[in-house]
Image (cartoon, rainbow, N blue to C red):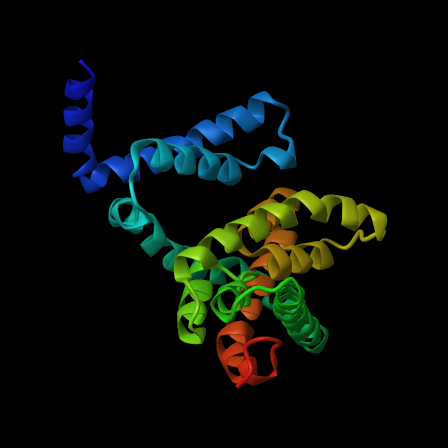
Amino acid sequence: MAEGVTDIWAFLAASPLLWLSLTLLAFQAGLWLQRRLGGSPVLHPVLLAMVGLIALLLLTGTDYETYFEGAQFIHFLLGPATVALAIPLYDHRRQIRALLLPLLTAGVAGAGTAAVSAVAVAHLLGADPRTLASLAPKSVTTPIAMGVSEKLGGLPSLTAALVLLTGALGCLLAPALIRLMGIRDDRVKGFALGVTAHGFGTAQAFGISATAGAFAGLGLSLAGILTAFLLPLARPLLPGLGP
């Protein structure tokens, strides 16, 4: 009986559609569970899906390369989804134009702080250069982060996991910090969520308002562009990654 189940699983695991289907099912299960438990930000559906998929990979002895071969279509869609954020940006172009200088300043400060603080703390804790390179771009959207990580000599797969954890933690902590700081402007809320929690934060910002979502998309895009262009140039100045 057990041998028959093993043979069936081996047959199914060879199909790329299996891991694509399981990824979508895991997310839907996480979404359902979060709603059933009152919508707590602690139980983010992506985080729940990650835990479930990791457990399944460990139980079945499936390596990441096999999983990614099936689920890479979702990874491909991350790029078009990021580009589609240009639509709400266009709708709010007048507000963005009026605040262009403060937004650029905040974007540089936010993206720079996210990279430098993460690398500095990990360096102090004894992380090796490859781990530091994987950690540096963890605060931007996954397609950009993985490309930057590879350019720096990091592990793109590790970076992808760190990006997801960063987004989940950002969504968890942001509401309390926004209340603590007395922020009421949806533009500020959205931009902060986009810069610090990339796609996770942008999705959460659209739950606040369309304006917050548009500015979150701007924060996500700006942080990604700045990180992609400036982080490789700033590598010699980062602790543990210098020449």
